[in-house]
Image (cartoon, rainbow, N blue to C red; front, side, top):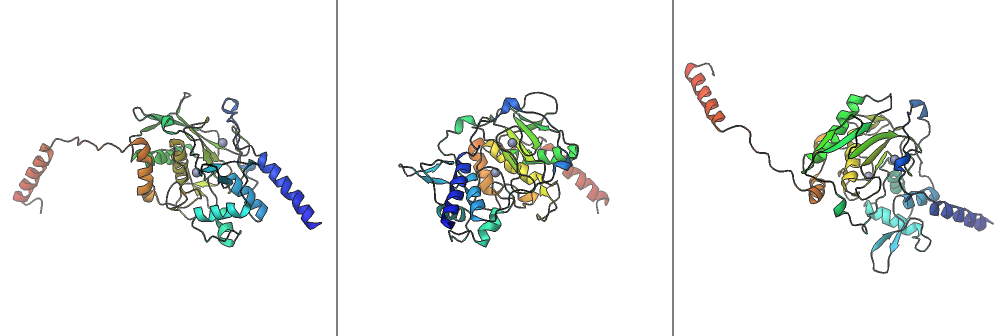
Length: 327
Ligand SMILES: [Zn+2]
Ligand SMILES: [Zn+2]
């Protein structure tokens, strides 16, 4: 009897997974502006407790892969023709994050799975030709914050997002400018909750924090933050006091520019799980190199002062020294 119930449960779970809306088109033209208030901050994100929860998590974040005949890794959300076993998905996850490979839902695996994270899968969409979708570097790219939430400080929020764009502009040929008027822009940023303007509903407090669309996706340039999260501009380890918006925004901007997750280094801004990074440490050398491979290095700045300035300064110092004023 027990095995029969378990079989029915597994079939139901598989049906849910196959019917997952991931991969549906982006409902760009059906975007509805709405105001979200703090009273909506009610539900908590999904907590991974059981194998069934973990199975769903692994499928959602791109660990349901198998080997194609050519030997390449293929992402196959819910494809019945190529379903990885739960154990092999666990192994893939544990290997990706350098956890002990037990092929079981052990404590270390559970802990990481329950860390707040980005909503995008960890798999690489290697079959897509990405290079011709990148953003131009010969003009200033524009961004706009869709601000209709009375509980955020607009100035503070805009400043943090500006810093996040600068995190990438600092090392590349890319330049960005905020636009506040109603005009078409390259990047739209918005705080959303639950079901919103695309096929990827947010899950409430913790769980997934934000998502964005790659340049080669239909919704390119869109960045959404889960408005039910507690966002902060403070730098402290996550202990219920909130997630640092600049860190999460820098990560999502990395996605809209074309970078995928980096599971190898938890100090990388493209690490999928939330991790506190000090502002001065944002963009490791490897992050800088990855973005420069797409958009080129920032040109060296040309000195703006004529060299005579330093001669004059030397003369002034000499005079002060002679008169004793500079002592
Ligand atoms: Zn991400
Ligand atoms: Zn969204």
